[in-house]
Amino acid sequence: MYYSLSFIQPTNPYSFNRYTDDAIPPLDLTFVRNTWEHWRIVPTERPTFAPPPLNTHVVNVDGANGNIDLTQALTGYPTYGNRSGSFDFAVINDYRNWQQAYTDILSTIHGKRLYCVYEEDPEWYYVGRWTVKSWVTGKNRSTVTLTYDLEPYKLRLYDLNSDWLWDPFNFQNGIITSRYTDADGAIFTKSHRVDSSEWNDCIIFDTSKIIGEWEKDAVGDGYIHKQDYISSILGNMPVALWLDVKPDSGETIQIQFKNSEINYGDEESVFKTYTSDYQGTDPSYIITNYSGTNSILMRAIGKGQIEVNFRPGRL
Image (cartoon, rainbow, N blue to C red):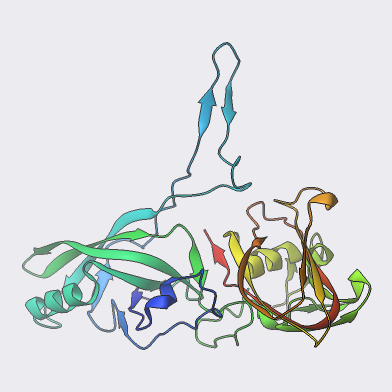
């Protein structure tokens, strides 16, 4: 293990946009450079991406004890700034001409906005801009310093409904989200047929069913808390749900959505009625799980077809 980083330059510029009205674009992995396989550079220390700084807003009130914390007043959840930091890599001089390696590294990442996948965390990727800060040449080896300015959340390589990927899948604690089921049937499925007049006849999300229970690990011999499934499936990055709603001819579909971290009471549930086809991301349906114990309910009545999707992110 060389604790390597892989850099990916998408050929589709919209791949960087998570808020497009189109379906979630697949990742374009056609252009990849790996720090060990292609450049034979090794980090001088085990790489760790810096945590993102918390965006805080605290008001001091004259004559009162303490302060008023308004950090989550606007959103209902914490927000963060970009991760920033640097990694030092040792360059093995006798592997290739150091000037050629220097040129290749500069041409690949310097000043570019890229995806980055860390070898020890292969199911997730970081998005941001990279630069080559310095290159110090020594007798036996050179040292190159790479700096980064990345979005606060890492993103899953595959979205909620994608086919799971063999190579990056973690067979100890990985979760195939598009195939997750419990005793009552499928909880997270790509497409839902709505043909009901009662809310509970078509449940799209109901994470409350699987919080606070233990079950046998599907791969190993141990037991895993189902809350870990929720964190892995939902992530904790606030993200708007993507929908494709198709009512049958002359019919309507009504959706109820409640995120317990934002819509605190039952009366604060989001209700929307669709009389015609709709496709896009809707900020009324925000997926969050910053507390790690979130409950999300989404259900529908009417007649037609609903498809939902999003790409999870985690700190």
